[in-house]
Length: 487
Image 1 (cartoon, helix red, strand yellow):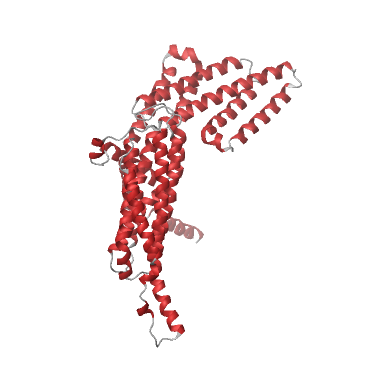
Image 2: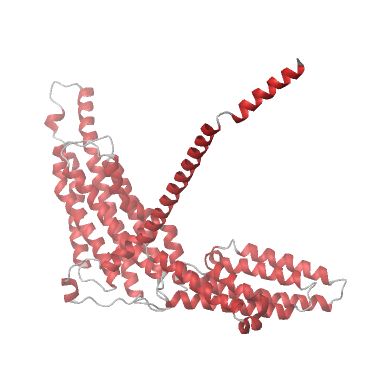
């Protein structure tokens, strides 16, 4: 019986494990094909997304090719025996330098290059000095001097990275200083031929950095200064479009219905880009100061002034944000009151928008405009009319509609409160428009300072007779920068 039981158990186990072989085989093939199709679909979607990114901004493809060219050139020090004999096994430092130094813009590449060479040279000089003093002090004090110097200099260099001025321009150099000094100080205690090794490494680092600069500046260079210029001028146009669009839409709707979220987001996109571009502008301005003269930008171009212009634009954009919040508030003004304010409010907004667009044209062409003074005068006149109308806002409330002789004092107060609540939206809107005018004047002042510092050319009558349109190349640059901001 035991034997039969075991046989039964074995037979059952055999049936469970094997089962219908053909059925299991079909299920296995089905799962395998499903996985293959899923992986192929994911790979296709990834490649399509990567292709779209490169197609939207071809400069990314060009940057990849430039990195490949630089790496191929420095790798010849490994492939060619005469070059390899000159630098030895330290040729890998040239390859590593290209990898960590090569950046998308010329300014970023030059900044990292100078930081790497400066940090390496300074750290090497100090490390050799400390090593020389430590060896002269004898075997007993050599580790002590090396350790104390490493502690002090590494701590000081690390603290310098918290200083805003050094962090903005020399943060990478401070990091390289710490790395190089630590490497030489520690290696010098055990390595006898330290000088020869350090000389070869510095030589290969110089080769790598020079190759990065040559490739970055000669093959389709991307200038951080040009990127900043296009970004700021494009934000001026967005600011003007947002200002004019929201007020025009407010007064063009007779109904008090709220705007849909999708339409509202499209109108808010312009000024929101102005509010969110500070970090990008700061980085670009710092990198632009490393770049040589290029295009219409001379050496020592006043890049800091672009940051001042951007700051005044953000002040104006924040006021537009409050204006849009007022427009979308729940307290809606009657159509009759809006009609009284419509004409003068639209005139103020039109003049402000025209002035901002003219400033964008002035910066884009780098020529002083003869229209700015006229636009400012028209804007001031319209603003004065709006201010006079705002001071007389109690007259917009008809006393005959507020109360009559039979009403009690509480009823009169309640009826007066209702017209005040109705008029409060347009009064707030008018006050914000007046504030926006004052902030637009600050933008004008900042742009005029830039025109004086950068020595913009005087405007010619024929130049301003031409259509104020953006060239196709500038449109592509602005689209590329806007897409990078969204990413």
